[in-house]
Structures are given as C-alpha cells and as structure tokens.
Amino acid sequence: MAKQNKLRIGFIGCGDIAGLQMSRFADRDDTQLVAFADVDHDTLDKRQASHPQSAVYADYRQMLRKENLDAVSICTPNRFHAAPAIAALRAGCHVLCEKPMAMTLSEAKRMYRAAHDSGHSLVIGFQYRLDPRTQYLRRLFEEDAFGKILFGRVQALRRRGIPNWGDFGRKAMSGGGPLIDIGVHALEMAHYTMGSPQPVSASADMFTYLGNRPSGDIASLWPDWDYRTHDVEDLAIGRVRFDNGAIMHIEAAYAAHIPKRSLMNFQLMGERGGATWEPCVFHTDESGHMVDKTPAWLGATDFNSVFLSKVDAFVDHLLYGAPCAAPASDGVMVQAMLNALYDSAARNGKEVAIRPLL
Ligand SMILES: NC(=O)c1ccc[n+]([C@@H]2O[C@H](COP(=O)([O-])OP(=O)(O)OC[C@H]3O[C@@H](n4cnc5c(N)ncnc54)[C@H](O)[C@@H]3O)[C@@H](O)[C@H]2O)c1
Image (cartoon, rainbow, N blue to C red; front, side, top):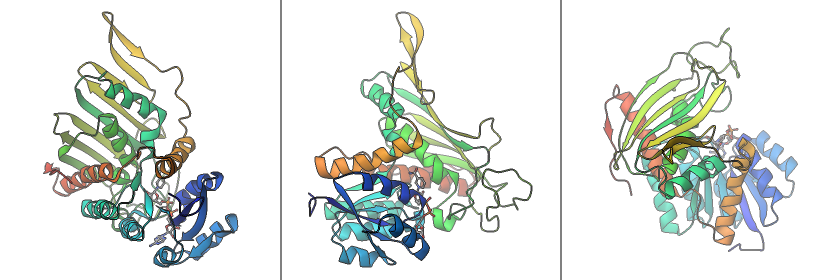
C-alpha cells in the first residue's frame, strides 16, 4: 500500500517517546522517516540531527499538506491527540496514536468516526497487550481456561514518581493523573485479556495529597515537580462493572506508600481459573489438585522490547495485512472507562453509567 517502496512516516510531537518509536522506524527497511512536526524548535533540531534526511515543520498541518505521508505517529501531550489524529486521517494517512487515545470520550469518538469515514487505520499505542505475558493469558481466555471471569484487580502504582517534566501534572493538558497516564496501561491490558467486555458503569475516589505541595525534602525519583500547577490525582481507586457481570478494581498512583518503587500488574479470577500477570502464573485445578502453571519461556518482556513491538505491529498491519493490534474501537471503550471513573470521582464516588458506545 505504500505510495513509494517504503512506508512514508511522519511524526507529530517529537519528544521522549517519539524518539523511541523513531529508532524502530529507522531500523526497518520498509519504512522511511520522512518528516517531523513539533511546536518546539530545539526538539526539532535534535531530531533532525539524528535523522538529517527528514524534513521538519513547526505546524503539523503544513507537514500533512506537503509530504504525501502514508502514516503518522501522534506523540503529543494528551490534549493534542485528537485534533492532529483527525487531521492526519482526513489527509489520507493511517495513524498510530500514543496512549491514552484522548482526554475525553467525545474526542475519542470523533477520532473513531474520522478513521471510519476515511477508511484509514487508527491504531492506539497500547503496547502492553503485545507483552508476551498478556498474549499468553489472552490465549488462555480464548481457550476458555478461566471459565467465566468474575473479577480483575488492576494496579499501576509508583511509590514516588510524580513526573517533573512535560504536562503530566496538569489536568487541562493530560486529562488526569496516574489513572489516565499509567493506569490506562494496566486497565487496558487486563480488559483485553478479559475479552474486552462492554463496561456498564464505574465508580471511583481520587486523592491529591502530595503533588500539590512543594517537593522540599520529600524524597522522589523525580524531584522538583511543579506543585503550583499540579491539579491531578496522586491516587485513584476505582471500580468498573461489565455487562457480563464481571467487576474490575483499579488502583493507580504517582505517590503510594508501597514496598516497591513501582508496580504494574493485574490479576484475574474466574470460575475455573485465575491468573497473575507478573510473575506470570495461571492458577487452576487439575487431576484433583490445585496447580499453578508458569510458562517456561515467554520471550522478551522488558519495556523497550514490548514498546518497539508496537511499531512492528503497526507496520505489519499496514503493509502485510496483520490484524490491527489495538483498534480505535478498543481505545474508545478504554476511554469510556477512564472518563466514567473521573466523572464518578468528581461526584464523590457516585456510580456513573456507561452507555453502549459505538
Ligand atoms: N506508550 C507508552 O508507554 C508511553 C510512554 C510515555 C509517553 N507516552 C505518551 O506519549 C505522549 C507524549 O509523551 P512524551 O513523554 O513523549 O512527552 P514529551 O513532553 O517528551 O513530548 C511531547 C512533544 O509534543 C510536542 N508538542 C506539544 N504540543 C504540540 C502540538 N500541538 N503540535 C506538535 N507538537 C506538539 C512538545 O513540544 C514535545 O516535544 C503522551 O500522550 C504520553 O502519554 C506513552
């Protein structure tokens, strides 16, 4: 499908995570890094120094008009996912959009519709579903090894990890704090493993108690965050109900007093089997005994390997007909859960209904 031999790739937002994606696109011999757009000139200079053959633009709309791109990766702060994704789709590009899909459900739905109307692919950057642990457990789900899944417990917790860069502490730019930033990963991979059931309601409580204070002598991995603009939650505790009767419990924090420096995990409990993602174990009954099954070999599960595999999955989908790893419809469903959890917290934990989505 490439308009030339190689898939012509553009980037909108060229900060940290874009750099990691670019390294994979640059390594592949079937993709070409054609152009980068960012509002920050120093960032563009840095990217062009590494990729001198790529054009740079301060305005992504100009890039979309001029460069005849096949695909665009959106790596801007969450607030700027929807508009460039929609513009790129309308310009005839396929889109890989970093997580979370958007800040709000209405943005996510507009993005979904733009993809549908354009006939182009909109893929959400949910790399954790490609992690071999997730793939193994999802396969067990497909083989009905869990029986009916009743409960999922989802955790994305940092003991002290309030980002001191970017816009992660500003609700107007990010849509929220750890729930939408890191909780989205754990939530979406657990939901995917459960077979992506339709959410019907959510409730949550959220607490801000540390990020809004001067970091002073508070120990942190990343000190000196901007406490004056920090208006997101430090800790979110939520619950989602699904139409198949299953319940998910989610904990997400930038600052939780836990034994580990950080924790990303989920557990599932079904009528016939259960599982823990890390360490990856399937718990069930066999031959009249309770057994725990641990895969002897899973493949690489480190962050970079899993992250880069989503670039491969995107290209394989566009060029070689591989199924879409994370379709926009899944992004909309995840966004609906995130937004209902935030809505509930704003209403003192009242349960909020989630209507059928698309
Ligand atoms: N999948 C993952 O594991 C993962 C990890 C980190 C970040 N992310 C996501 O990636 C996105 C970017 O995060 P980051 O850590 O790279 O942030 P970052 O701050 O390092 O980079 C964002 C870049 O976008 C640019 N930008 C801002 N507004 C723009 C606009 N309107 N047009 C063009 N460029 C614009 C900024 O100048 C900056 O260079 C976020 O949505 C974040 O949630 C995903």
